[in-house]
Amino acid sequence: MKLLHTFLRDLKVSYRTYYIYIEFIMALIIVAVLLFVVPENADPTTKLFLHVESGINSEQILTSMEKDQSADITLLDSREEVVLAMEKDRASQGAVIGETSEGMGYEIILQGYESEEIRNMMESVLLAGFKTEHPQYTETTTVKVLDADAERLSDRTNYMPILLMMNSAFMGLFIVAAYVFMDKEEGTIRALTVTPVSIRDYLLSKVGVMLFTGLLTGLITTVLVVGMKVNYLHLFLVLAASNFFGTALGLFIASFYDSIIKSMGALYIIIMIMAFGGVSYFMPSFSPLIIRILPSYPLLFAFREVFLERPDTGFILTTSGLFILAGAVFFMAAVLRYKKTLTV
Picture (cartoon, rainbow, N blue to C red):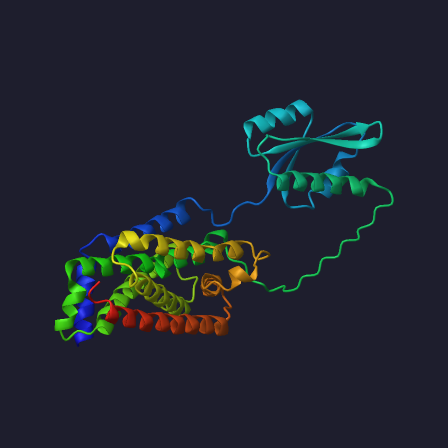
């Protein structure tokens, strides 16, 4: 009963301050950006305006180049028309194929802002058309699909794991520290020495408030963005485990400082380190050991699993269990720290 009373009191007090609303505001911003800015699936193709000079088999080249679905090709009658079309569509590129003294040649016309990757892609598309013109050309590329049933998330849903991690899982790291320092300034922690409420119950109530808020914002965000295309039981488990870990870590870090200003540097560094896991999440080919050992790395992929139709339940349960265990360690360490620093 003491723990429940403390939790209800902290929940009421927390919603009278502005700290807790930061998480709700961030959740609404995330929903607005994902629904109105990020497309469900971005178009990966590049608009290419092409002119093929007379004397060259334009139909064969065009047919060959269209096999590469990375470019949407429009055939025009002259170089001038290519330039005019590019002026109207600043996201497009252009090319001219013609005869040279050494045989068939090409000219690539760019807007000026293209990256090296875009230039290489355009060149490979043009060269593919040239190769089929060669009389001795034979197709030597073999494509082997390793997993024909592999699921792919939409571009919008693919952003959800990192946003849930940063807002619903680890935002409590900052907010719980702010409430602890507010209680220190008001003398609440010192007053615990003459009340029946233990330090453990006090900290558990903070964990409960952050858990309630993290689950609420995470579920609201998910419902508004993806609807029912998610396993909510798995999502609830991953959110709860990661939020508990983040809150316990925030309590432990806060125990070494006596003001939010002094702790801000350490909290910011921890958040930035956790964010590095997102690099390998979006670029799986780059996953060095120093990133794979970060807690955020497996957490992102556990969040990703909950949005799949056939999730890896074993991975979700293992990851959640490890975060609960790590959170329990940090929580017990925080309890010991606060018992020693009641006079801070």
